[in-house]
Length: 369
Ligand code: FAD
Ligand code: UDP
Image 1 (tube, protein in one colour):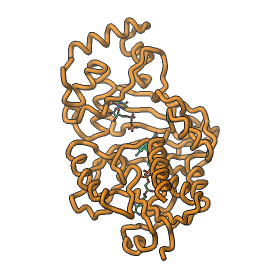
Image 2 (cartoon, rainbow, N blue to C red; image 1 turned 135 degrees about the horizontal axis):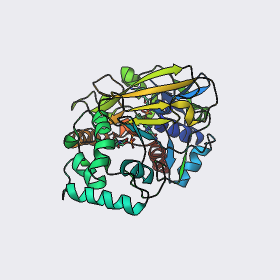
Image 3 (cartoon, rainbow, N blue to C red; image 1 turned 180 degrees about the vertical axis):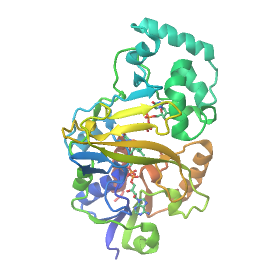
Image 4 (cartoon, protein in one colour; image 1 turned 60 degrees about the vertical axis):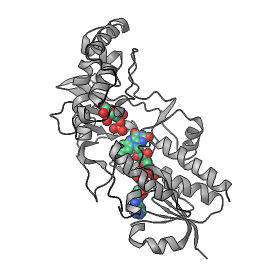
């Protein structure tokens, strides 16, 4: 007899949602987490009255009402709207690209004037089938915006020149001819009041959890303890990198507690100039409009990833997609193991996508019982 119906590896959103849904239906679950806390990358920690997003800023946004209602069972969300600022050579611009950005860049007032300038620039550099990010970006927004607001940021973020990066990375840059600084087009958006950790705590309230426990260090033992395994760690690690490691981009956070009330006046400020070594500065208190005498900022340095570092962004280029397919083919043959989440499926999932995919998995899984 197995002791648990499910051994769930990882206490991030995918692991926590599946643990919650399965235990609610009476299946006994054990969650294993190799870090010393639950929550995966959405983990927030309260420091000086401020909920700090320890693994990078997390803004919840979705157009899926079912997912919005789902997360609202576990927390009250505030009305935070993400409106990042970009700084390029000491000039300040609003993001995403909208009339506020265009009026500052081109000294114009109306959408007609903005469109004329951008269309002219787009024509000047138009390429029929954009083969790389530089060509794609110029096709979308023209040379001025590309050079001031995209090139430096993207090259820091990905550690490669824009003409060596795949075009698909910026397929989704919103361009708006209205005065609207809301970064997302989604219908619902906000930050959970009190941070994300309490959401995960509620999901795991009735579930056995072992922290500081690396499943892969005692794989055979845990494989025997559960009838099924839900694995949300890196899929290549599960197979001992038998085809070689998948590539990631890593991020280093430099956190500072400052003896001042307000450092930059906005939660997110992007530095789009290549010469500034960090990509952005996050001021955490502004996510929850926290009123306190100190402030905490995190400078984000995008960095090269090597085996053993925290994997943050999957690099979904051709080479890595082909490598992932090999691991995925192995995974398809498993009868007792399911791979889920950002690392298990090697996909750049946002939080709402992870919850959707966890709920879809549960639906199929329980219908087969
Ligand atoms: P994870 O959160 O990575 O959880 C996996 C867990 O498994 C981790 O806790 C890990 O320690 C554990 N684990 C791994 N291997 C083992 C092992 N062998 N044994 C035991 N435990 C193991 N999404 C948004 O919607 N909005 C945002 O603004 C946003 N910002 C982001 C910013 C950054 C810098 C990053 C990197 C991501 C951001 N995301 C954002 C995406 C979001 O973080 C993910 O969608 C979500 O955290 C994925 O959850 P997960 O459970 O798949 O993975
Ligand atoms: N980007 C950019 N300038 C910016 C912000 C983003 O050029 O000021 C580009 C960059 O290529 C980045 C992509 O847009 O990789 C997606 O950025 P976003 O902030 O939407 O995603 P995140 O890094 O938060 O996942």
